[in-house]
Image (cartoon, rainbow, N blue to C red; front, side, top):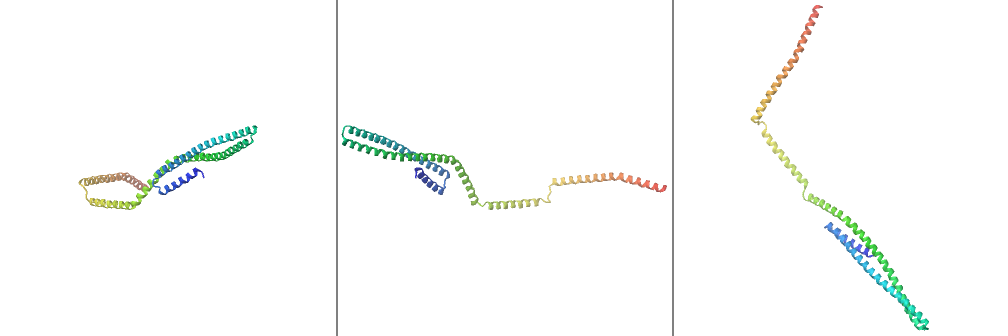
Length: 241
C-alpha cells in the first residue's frame, strides 16, 4: 500500500467523523483541505528522503564497483608476478565487492519504484487539493443556504403561523363588526348640509319632469293635427259619394 493510500484512509476517516458532527460545514471543508495539504507535505518529505537514499546508494554502488575492478586489477598483477596466492586473495575481495554491487543494484531498483509511486501520489494529491479548493466556495454557499432554510423551518415550527393567521382573521372580523355598529348609528341621522342637498336634488328632479311632459306634449300636437286633417278629408269624400 502506498503512502498516499494510507493518507487517503486517514483523511476519509476524519471526513466521516466530521460529517457525523456536521456542526460547521465551512470549518469542515477547510479542515479537509488542511488534512490533504498536510498529507501532501508528508508525501513530499518522504519523497525527498527517498531521493537522498538513492543518491547515497548510488555512491556506494559506484564505490563497490570501483573496488571490485581494483581488486581484479591487483589479482592480474599478482598472476603476472607469479604470486597465485595473492591473486586468489585479490579475486576473493573482488568477488565480495561485486556481490555488494549486485545487492546495491537491487536496492536501487526497489527505491526507484518507490520514488515513482511517490511522484504519482504527489500528482494525484495535488489534483485532489485543487479540485477541493475549486469546490470549496460552492460547498460553503450550499451550507449557508441550507442553514438559512433550516432556520426558517425551525421558526415556522416554533411559532404556529396558522394559529397567528386565524387570530388575525378574528381581529379583522371584530373590526368589521365595530365599523358596522358605527354605520348603524349614522343611518337616519342626516346633517343640515345633507338635507339641503337632498332638497336641491328634489327640485332638479321636478324640473326634469316638467321638461319631459312638455317634450311629450310638443311631440303629440303635430300628430293630432294630422289626424284631424285626415278625418276631415274622409268626411268630405263620403259627402261627395
